[in-house]
Length: 74
Image (tube, rainbow, N blue to C red):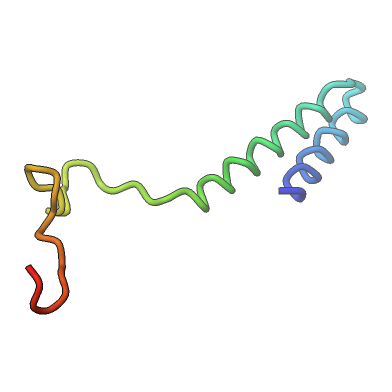
């Protein structure tokens, strides 16, 4: 996360000095922060199941199967 902020902030700072502006460093910092947060969310977010395909675990009534019990108990 820190490297994205440093790289994009540095690019913004370089453009600021080259173009004589004063806002591109801030834009670069915010862009680097946003991209870093996005990449972290994409890496650690749970996978999204494909739409339209059920796994068969959801049956009417809300239970997938009979509960497991110890041997000899019902």
